[in-house]
Length: 221
Ligand SMILES: *Cc1c(COP(=O)(O)O)cnc(C)c1O
Image (tube, rainbow, N blue to C red; front, side, top):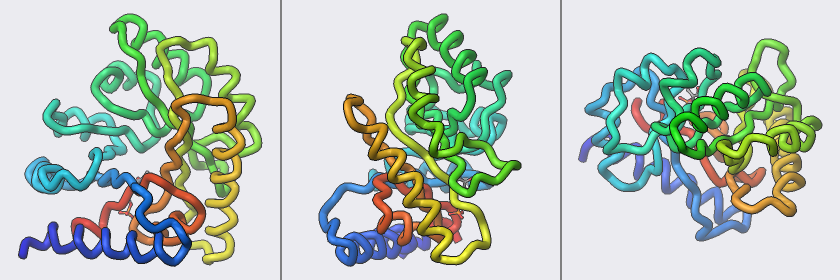
């Protein structure tokens, strides 16, 4: 059997096992394949299985080179304001909305094109200076400040865990994102996505409530 399909089968099996372990059997978990460095051919073969919901790209240039309207795409990496014009209306979610000037530019471009751009708010769970994302405690305030943008629809939260930390610290990071997500969800329609978990940490992310995973290497290598 093809390696890609074999990897996907094994990954889905592990997801199902983990869901069972944490009492979430049968829940639908979206898989967004992290496409960085992967060829368009590999990505379309994976997408054609119908078992992943989107390809997630980090860099706008790479997204531009690979983009085809036959597939669903998300932006999952830090987005510069001057690149917003290349993605609005083409991607399903901008998963990395993390600052007001970025929101302002998304609003401007989306309004001009007559579209509503769906976004997730990136939370910086490790509160590392160098990384993008807002701190969990500021989610509510940030969401309120986005209400003035009619062409942005906020659909949930995305979190990237810090690298090289132990299971305990990881659990703490994911739980912090989940708690902020749950709190923000109250009273908000269409706010349902909790995107966290990559190849190394997806089991833990599932145990902490993730409903969207972003695996990369585990699918392709
Ligand atoms: C690369 C990347 C992933 C996937 O990482 P793997 O370790 O290859 O599974 C997920 N999310 C983001 C934001 C990424 O940059």
